[in-house]
Image (cartoon, rainbow, N blue to C red; front, side, top):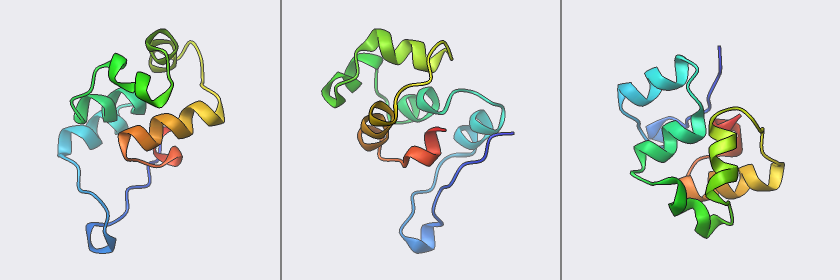
Length: 85
Protein backbone atom coordinates (compact mmCIF):
# COMPACT_ATOMS: atom_id res chain seq x y z
CA UNK A 1 0.00 0.00 0.00
CA UNK A 2 1.30 3.44 -0.92
CA UNK A 3 1.47 6.07 1.82
CA UNK A 4 0.97 9.73 1.22
CA UNK A 5 1.68 12.78 3.30
CA UNK A 6 -1.05 15.35 3.07
CA UNK A 7 -0.74 17.97 5.79
CA UNK A 8 -3.80 18.36 7.97
CA UNK A 9 -6.03 21.27 6.98
CA UNK A 10 -5.52 22.75 10.46
CA UNK A 11 -1.81 23.04 9.63
CA UNK A 12 -2.45 24.87 6.36
CA UNK A 13 -2.68 21.70 4.32
CA UNK A 14 -5.04 21.13 1.45
CA UNK A 15 -8.04 18.86 1.67
CA UNK A 16 -8.70 16.46 -1.17
CA UNK A 17 -11.93 14.80 -2.25
CA UNK A 18 -12.50 11.22 -1.21
CA UNK A 19 -12.10 10.00 -4.80
CA UNK A 20 -8.53 11.40 -4.91
CA UNK A 21 -7.61 9.54 -1.72
CA UNK A 22 -9.35 6.42 -3.00
CA UNK A 23 -7.43 6.47 -6.28
CA UNK A 24 -4.14 6.89 -4.40
CA UNK A 25 -4.97 4.06 -1.98
CA UNK A 26 -5.96 1.85 -4.93
CA UNK A 27 -2.41 2.23 -6.26
CA UNK A 28 -3.07 4.56 -9.18
CA UNK A 29 -0.05 6.62 -10.17
CA UNK A 30 0.01 9.71 -7.92
CA UNK A 31 1.30 12.00 -10.67
CA UNK A 32 -1.74 11.15 -12.78
CA UNK A 33 -4.14 11.43 -9.83
CA UNK A 34 -2.92 14.88 -8.76
CA UNK A 35 -2.66 16.09 -12.38
CA UNK A 36 -6.25 15.02 -13.05
CA UNK A 37 -7.40 16.58 -9.78
CA UNK A 38 -5.80 19.88 -10.82
CA UNK A 39 -7.52 19.67 -14.22
CA UNK A 40 -4.21 19.60 -16.04
CA UNK A 41 -3.26 17.78 -19.22
CA UNK A 42 0.13 16.15 -19.66
CA UNK A 43 1.19 19.02 -21.92
CA UNK A 44 0.41 21.51 -19.14
CA UNK A 45 3.39 20.19 -17.21
CA UNK A 46 5.71 21.16 -20.06
CA UNK A 47 6.07 24.51 -18.26
CA UNK A 48 7.73 22.53 -15.47
CA UNK A 49 10.22 21.24 -18.04
CA UNK A 50 8.69 17.77 -18.36
CA UNK A 51 8.12 16.49 -21.87
CA UNK A 52 4.66 14.92 -22.28
CA UNK A 53 6.15 11.63 -23.51
CA UNK A 54 8.41 11.40 -20.45
CA UNK A 55 5.46 12.25 -18.20
CA UNK A 56 3.41 9.51 -19.85
CA UNK A 57 6.21 7.03 -19.16
CA UNK A 58 6.27 8.08 -15.50
CA UNK A 59 2.49 7.81 -15.19
CA UNK A 60 2.43 4.33 -16.74
CA UNK A 61 5.33 3.08 -14.61
CA UNK A 62 7.75 2.53 -17.51
CA UNK A 63 10.09 5.11 -15.97
CA UNK A 64 10.42 6.32 -12.41
CA UNK A 65 11.53 9.88 -13.07
CA UNK A 66 14.64 11.50 -11.73
CA UNK A 67 14.64 13.38 -8.44
CA UNK A 68 14.89 16.65 -10.35
CA UNK A 69 11.94 15.74 -12.59
CA UNK A 70 9.77 14.62 -9.68
CA UNK A 71 10.60 17.85 -7.83
CA UNK A 72 9.52 19.90 -10.86
CA UNK A 73 6.31 17.91 -11.23
CA UNK A 74 5.55 18.21 -7.51
CA UNK A 75 6.03 21.97 -7.60
CA UNK A 76 3.79 22.34 -10.65
CA UNK A 77 1.10 20.20 -8.99
CA UNK A 78 1.38 21.92 -5.61
CA UNK A 79 2.29 18.75 -3.72
CA UNK A 80 5.48 17.40 -2.17
CA UNK A 81 7.84 14.92 -3.80
CA UNK A 82 6.87 12.50 -1.04
CA UNK A 83 3.28 12.68 -2.31
CA UNK A 84 4.49 11.41 -5.69
CA UNK A 85 6.58 8.45 -4.55
